[in-house]
Structures are given as structure tokens and as C-alpha cells.
Image 1 (cartoon, one colour):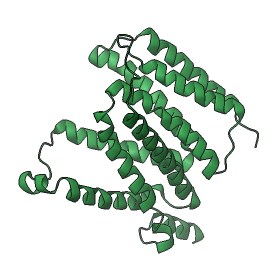
Image 2 (cartoon, one colour):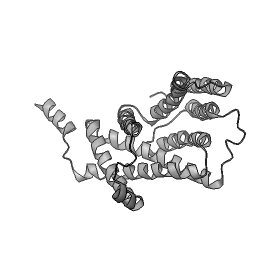
Image 3 (cartoon, helix red, strand yellow):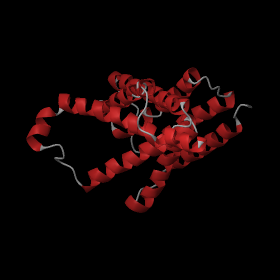
Image 4 (cartoon, helix red, strand yellow):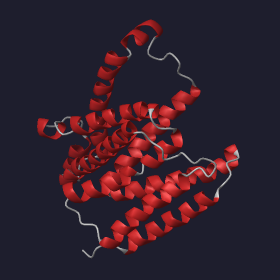
Length: 250
């Protein structure tokens, strides 16, 4: 009987105001961060954006320790720095000498994005783990409900005329639909990582995914691996090893 009650509690959508009230905060933070991703391209090119995006790693580590009070060892901090260096090296374009020539506006937006991303991730992990018996899909449901509400408001403010004249699905294609599906599945996967692991694992998995994407691109798009990419991959691999070996004793 008690097992049935626990199962029912963990999967029911009805909840209390105390539980729901925490979800608008990460939903709003993710909305602002995603909007900044579009505005930042007015000041930064794609390779520069990918490099500046590595600031998320540092902000996540700092906020992870400050907010969740989980200590990282000195070896793990060194591994974090190596991770940033490895990802940056892997993304350098050897044929370009102006990848990091970013204007002040670009740096400011990149730093804001990094702080928003780090805080949103750490805060989401905190509310996911606050109720460990709660089903992760139910928690996702409430997070996405507020995300949809905030995005609807943003659409009304920014694109109301376009939506009214051309329709909400104007410009959609099969690629667009697949991208939406991919982002939805990625969001579910990330929430499970936060629920059952932590943000540090998410940071490393994102970095490894970037490297694996480049490897897959060799076969799909004829991508040529550069020396910088190879060296960056080696540094990221060393960083993962150091992070695992540097875990503080419990």
C-alpha cells in the first residue's frame, strides 16, 4: 500500500503552490539566455561564439560550489581549466587569425549568458533533487509549462504582427521539426542528468558531445580534423580523467 502511495505521489500532476512556485525562475532564465544567443551573433561570429560559450563551464563550477555547497577539489578545478582550454583549442580555426577579436558588447553578452546558464542549471538541479521521489517527467512538465508561457509572451511582444499575418508555423520545414524534436529530447536527457547526477557531469557530457559531433561530421560532411582539434581532444580526455581521480573523499 505504501509503495503504491509513493508511486502515485511521484507521478501525479496535481501539486502544491510551494512546489510549483520554484519553476518560473529557471524557465525565465533559460528564456533570456536563449534570446541572448541570437543577439550575440550581431557581435560575434560562429567560431568565436563557440569559444566564448566555454565560459559556461567556469560559471557552472563556481555557482555549483556556491549555491549547492558541494566542494570541488583542487585537482577538479585544474581539470575544469583544462576542459575550457581543450574545448577552445579544438574549436580554433587554423586558417583564421581573428577568432577571438570580439568587441566589448560581445564579451558582456557572453559573460551574462554564462552566468544565466550556470545559475539556471544549478538552480534546476537544486529543485530537481529537493524532492527525490518526484517523477522527473512531472518536474519537466511544470518547468516546460512556464517555459511555454514565457515564450508565448516573448512571441506576442516581438513577432505578433508576423504571426498574425503569416501564421505561427510559417517557415517551418522538416529540418525545423527535427531540430525541435532534437532539442526536446536533449532537454529531457539533461534534466535526467541533473536529477540523477549533477551539473558537472552535464558540463563534461556537453564537451564530449561537441567532440563526437565533429567526429560524426567527418563521415557525414567530409569534415577534416585539424591538429588543433586533435590536441584539444587529448586535453579534454585528460581533464575527464583528472576530474574522476580528483573527487574529494566523502
